[in-house]
Image 1 (cartoon, one colour):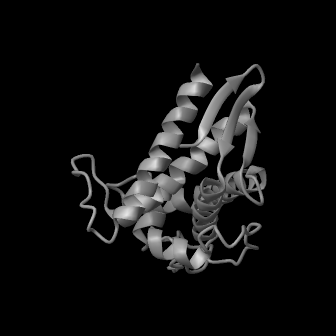
Image 2 (cartoon, one colour; image 1 turned 120 degrees about the vertical axis):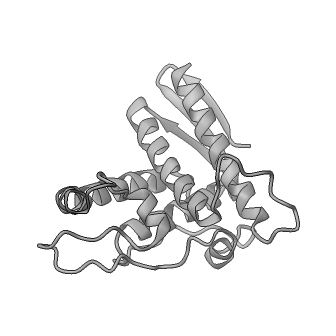
Length: 197
């Protein structure tokens, strides 16, 4: 598991090569999903010992670009048809389609921009070529927590994770993705605990 410790200036997170590569890939996939299909440059790659983007996409199911199908920006955009994106950009008013559409029209583009920017900051801070440490001040820790939560929500939606869900069967083809989901949950929990400590 990733090492996390508190210092006088904030939080220090230590990643091994696989953890850094995995987090880089997952955050990049969610960033691309939030960027509404507009291509973004990929983060710096790793070495041959690190899983490729194609392998990680197959593992997590987050590499699919489903887009949102928005029409003219003057119109209220519909809720995203992609369930993972809908989880990241939920309707503000579930019982009032008109109010939900208007709220979405007024806020969605800035929410997307903020989430993409937060993801970009996390990607820029990760060790580029293997293991390393990342030092996070309180503001950056909050940004990382928001981005890690977005990744967890997207992956959990793809996996149809529920609170009542039993441990996955090791023979389930999605079992490795569940392990990744649990790792993200643990990373988020440890960051919260250390930041609050």
